[in-house]
Image 1 (cartoon, one colour):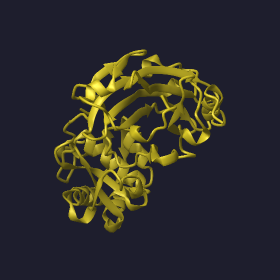
Image 2 (image 1 turned 180 degrees about the vertical axis):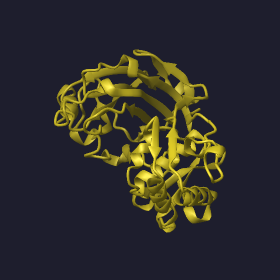
Image 3 (image 1 turned 90 degrees about the vertical axis):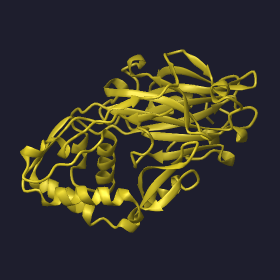
Image 4 (image 1 turned 90 degrees about the horizontal axis):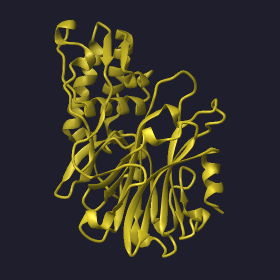
Length: 339
């Protein structure tokens, strides 16, 4: 039960075979997003154009992208394998510099020894030798193709019941698309605040965000920015070991903030689209609940609590919230008395 990139045949990044003097190739939307992440991480010039709905790529730029792929040090890249409940399956690639965040939960294989290497090299060769420009059209679309509990604002679900037993570890996946507008780029960051029954933080060490990636005992661990495109459309993920939480931590608020929103012209969630939060049973990879909340978001805020995982009558539950705050991270610190 997971969110996946909707399969779609895409010929030669937007053009038909007859439009080019070279053979075209077909790529799924997930593969297209995978290529975008690779180019961006490899430092290819203007790789952000891969995220445009329609963009003309000159032959010179296409050649530069192809060169970025073909000359990349393969020993610096690893294929990520994730357990789906039955077997380990390939789920993208990661640069060695970011591999640490996956080492405890994934199987990592040198890219050189995998079919993904052949796929990338074929695309790189075609880009690096094309004598004409390319038109990249379309965008990767997130689509939930398997059933989990779909919530609206205020809705709740018993996670233990959905998992078919007592949960021990859950993964929180959060995703969003930022509408293309003029001005500074948006930088969105996920966080979790552990609260007590009174709705107050149990301590600053239990506020897990980009400035504090782990709580005590590694009960809550931020997985960092999602750079591989491997995580079923999630932009960021946070892993929670429910067995390591102290008894006083009964309420985990899941939030996303816009970094330096005020300094960048008063940025708000008004241009954030397709925002969602989902809860995954880490032991099976099963998505238990999902909340698509953009339509419920307050456009004037720069901090948003997507939902909460909370303990009630001995069972873990999830409630969809969509509550907005101002003042970015500091707004959350003040609201939940993090000290």
